[in-house]
Image (cartoon, rainbow, N blue to C red):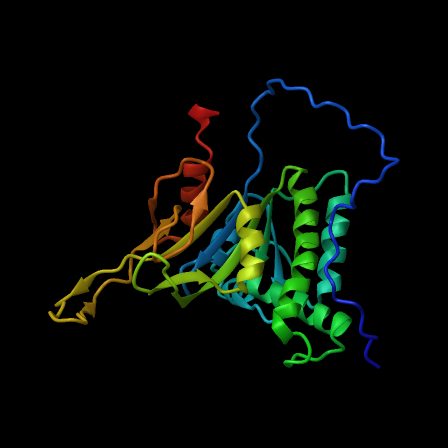
Length: 288
């Protein structure tokens, strides 16, 4: 039996002030001691780039795999990655329960928590919201009606990010692995064009992008030969073997970082060196 439909109206996360509220304390300005905090990273890559291997070779990692994600297990079966603690997460409720359990522990044996992949976890979130708030109706009178489902799901997604914050506060790096898709971009300043974006709903990505310290885009170096002339020039792609990582936003992709990383980073073809190469540009000992 499906659960009863509930009110989907978004409620404010902070209650409005009341007349009886005590006066707020005046904040005190002052300097604090600089401290390097474990980063929260979103790594979105084209297929086959090596994002799962990157997570597997991070320091003391544990990997949470969304239902249907088999990349790590396939790599493990070919002995291409180390055997690390891992679990397949089948539902949104079980993900929150697991993260809550990790957050409640006084200390953790891990230095990195990997979520593979973000799109799979978003699907679990949307399934939960659809059955909780829309009686399991994915149609135009349910979850997708005026995009209500995606809007409601953001609050649940933020709950997950809050639990990840608690895990991160215990000294654990958070690494969110994601796929990419190519979508048209409506350019308010000129002609429209295509760009790589995270393969999740734009509302989910908006809060995730704001939350992470670095959103990195991994692809292969593009080399085009024999470009034709004319209004719609075309060429022959002859690249695709050299991995490259982008750390700052450009018209063709989304990226950012708070660590002063170079815009482009050449990544070794050895998958075991992907994480260490990225880390060398995040944590520079001479600057800490």
